[in-house]
Amino acid sequence: METRPSFKDFKSKALSNENVKKEYDLLEERYKIIDMIISMRKAAGLTQEEIAAALHTSKSNISRLESHNYTSSPKLSTLMEYARASGHKLELHFKKV
View 1 (cartoon, rainbow, N blue to C red):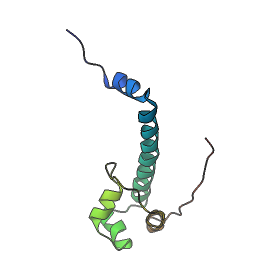
View 2 (cartoon, helix red, strand yellow):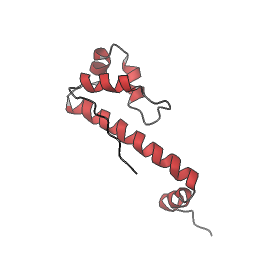
View 3 (cartoon, one colour):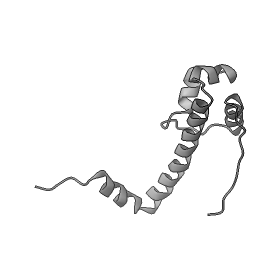
């Protein structure tokens, strides 16, 4: 009987494909940003409802922004407003790869 590959094996094989690796790397950066904004909000002791009120939007928009399944990218102005509402300032840096 053949054993199923582990997720680690599957991931390793998938990432050996250059196109898959490129997309994976792009998602990794996006997930880091999402994790940072969620951490900012929580560190400020704010709920999604409170951030939504500060940004004059709905909780569902904030929930979507903080979701790893969200398919479109937030505007820079949205990230700046979110940072301000949570007591932070957005700084943008570029790093040569």
